[in-house]
Length: 332
Image (cartoon, rainbow, N blue to C red; front, side):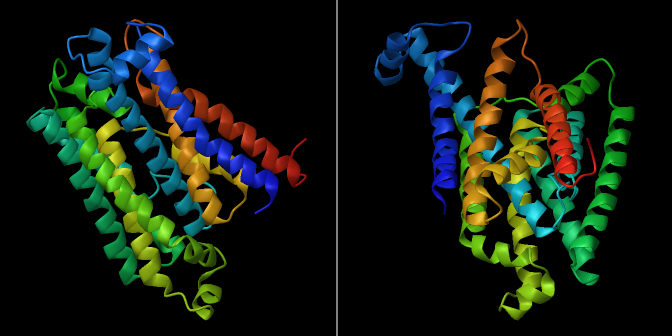
């Protein structure tokens, strides 16, 4: 690894740590750095700032870090796996399945646990449908993409049906607000399963990082180098889908992180997954934590995260697209 790329990687990995400390300080109930440090490390549970940081801000900040890392890392892996720069969490139907599962749970129950469980279960169901159909057709990247688009469209239609039958005065606003995304429901109890699934999914992707590099060369080239292409592709899709499902079930529909962040990280550290995975995860975690801090402090009422990621992601994507076209002489 060259020295500039090594420095860029270390800077990206250090960025979430600094933003985590800043997120603990920022809020409507404020205080100085010294007050926050005393509250963070004190044992006086009667202190308001101590309780606010440990029970509200810290689990929410950690959830933002995990969700951002999961979405960005899975986006980087799927873009390399399918050799398509436009692939993100939505392409395999996982996000649409999660949206339908959460909306159905809100319609039938409304409890936070039911919503999170429904989103996770139907996200995995969507992934299973894509793999089951795609495997019978050869599990080629194009086949999985097309099946994913079809499964996503199916769950989008089912989501529309849920919206039609939902009570417009109570259930429908709850469904709409959940679909906009946010981390207001994050707590230590919801953070535990998210952290466990994140460790498992990211750990697997790190273990197969060198094989992922070979898959980007093409199926025939990877097979000639000893890679079992179809099982590895299926296992990688499962790991990425678990990361997406865990994130969406916790935070709702968060767009653009999995699409834009990997391109930025790739421009800084290169396409090698040994560097790209940690760089994408770190940058995704930092971006989502920064946006969540803005979401809960900028206005008197909380701004849904999906709105902020869209406002940031669309201009960033267009900037990257123009740069890509200019590099190839297709734009001025």
